[in-house]
Length: 265
Ligand code: DGL
Image (cartoon, rainbow, N blue to C red; front, side, top):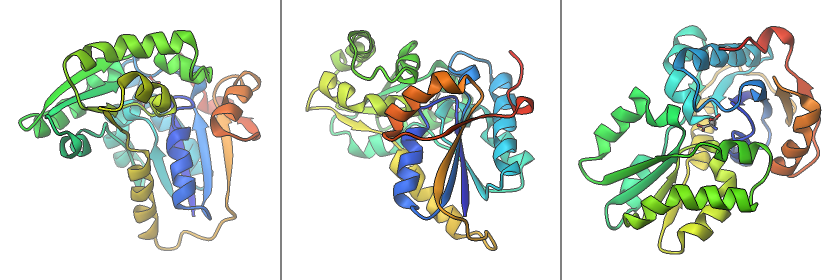
């Protein structure tokens, strides 16, 4: 079984580690679209083109399932990927539904990218649940870049987290959804800033369980040696240090072939 996973950058590693935990014997391929991170402020058409290119690369390399380890790319491109590729696609969305169940006071915060928060898919998600709870959202410009640099607890990262969570905390949320895979790496910092009264939720483990279920239903996906391989559309030399830091071990990083790197928006 080979699982192909992509994100705009390194944030999807937070999903990849859950998939590895859930399916230790699977072969995992990960692509970081570092040449074009962050996706958050980019237009939908651009994210769709990039998602098609990256998923196409993973399929070329034998993926049986493609995981979009990015809320922003899921919102922009999952229906298109499903139409275009003849294999299962697993996407992800901010955990508004689990937050509805977890919240005691009915006030939930969501941290995500501008792209996710402005998407029709997120609007539909809110429509579904906001009759039961009050959802306060906050876009977080600059935070993805801090994670890309593995700057997980620097004064600048802390200042951004404080700035973005302050209005939500003032409004009395008791549950905070990490609606961007990058932010999962900031969980200890976010929990420290939010305090013990606030429950922090993300979807990485749930997505990994979903991947295992989907993969378990596939017939004829041959045996593969386990292990993880990494690619980037950006500068591999530059990315090696933050990748190793976030993944927690030294790994080999490959450059994505030129035809998959694309051109600017
Ligand atoms: N990691 C991504 C997400 O879950 C996108 C971050 C970005 O590139 O803006 O939304």
